[in-house]
Amino acid sequence: PERAVTLNVRACDLDDLDACFVAARLLAAGEGMVADRQRALALFSRACNDGMAAACSRAAGLSPGEAEEFRRRACALGG
Image (cartoon, rainbow, N blue to C red):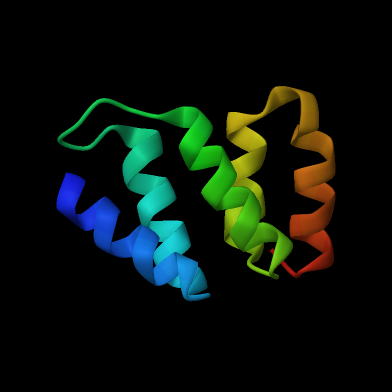
């Protein structure tokens, strides 16, 4: 799982939104590693800002203070 996160973060850095989402999901869940919700939120937020509605919805669940804004973006993107 850690290697999967590393590889997906690299792909995310190359603007692969699906990879951002996968890495964030793994980090948020702590699948096979210690969860890192802050890092997951940063990756979900990046994908959200680039137009991925599902990432906006996931970000809302990790950031109570910004949840309403993330949900609003998800709706605007059709999610």
